[in-house]
Amino acid sequence: RSRLTLPEEQSKVFLLFSCLQRMFLETYARWQWLVHWLPRLRALGTSHPVDTSVIGAFTADFNIAADLLRIGCPVWLVRPLREKQATPIHRIIPPLDETFHNRLPLRMSEFELDLADAEPPHRLLFSG
Image (cartoon, rainbow, N blue to C red):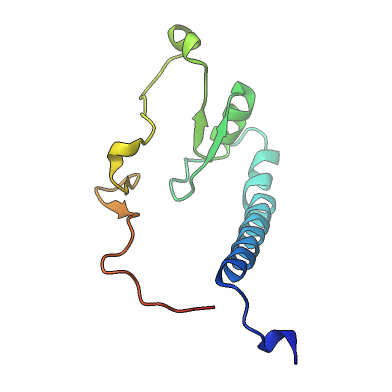
């Protein structure tokens, strides 16, 4: 019998799908960088407004942060707490902890994303 007709374990199917999804998202992000962001970076002397539709990038390097901000990419500048006095801080955002109750606040919106398990559970799509 063909391997395509044999059922697989649910965990293996999920693993393969998540690997495929990750490869797709990484490839899409690289394509976006080449098509959208790199031309802006190469155009010296230009500045773009920050695109709030993207998550942005984390960096500890001031030069990288300046370049990304110039091309309109949101930047999260990560600095050691000991440098707090020397770094101008506009806003401190605390990390999420156990008290967030599976609710993630959405940026630039009053809505929250519910990350809790469905109650009652979602219907079963696969069993194997």
